[in-house]
Image (tube, rainbow, N blue to C red):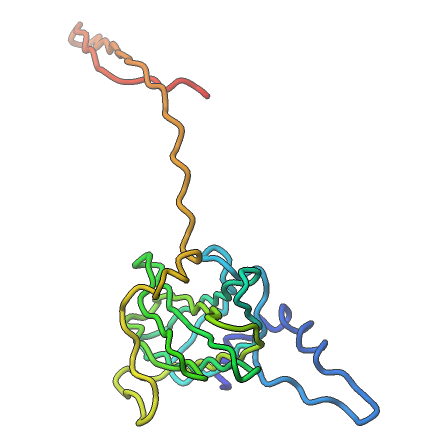
Length: 224
């Protein structure tokens, strides 16, 4: 966790307000500091606006805190990460209310698609996926299938090839999200550019040395 903290240090000023708000004193003494390293920041409901959590390397582990709901008011929480080297990313997504069914998909900006999705009915959604190259970026995208809950998302970066321990969830399928529930997280399609009015143009070039003319065809774009 020490490595993760060093890379996440730049985030601390952003999230310090959330940490301080939850560390209040009372007549019974100080309440415990919440068990997360960073807290999600809205808006992070679309591909454009994922929380940038920086770089991770093998051995790093940290906990993301957040809250999600299933009524469309907070459909996704996206977190953007970059890997310093090839690694296996292991995660566990736990709803704190104990009854909500939360899911996680992995967006690959290079593919322009979801590379992995974990959408089981398990109380804690967990699994592992490989990031095969250094410098690769990816988004962890949390959504709620059923329920409104605060959650903790534990993330660890391990060497590729360690595999899963007995009893853990299998590696993710490389399929698209079930029922298209995650489609709204995809980048919005850019509006088609307005047609450009091009006019034919001929350039006449005179070479004084050879006393010759050369005509070149071209086009002129009208100013908008």
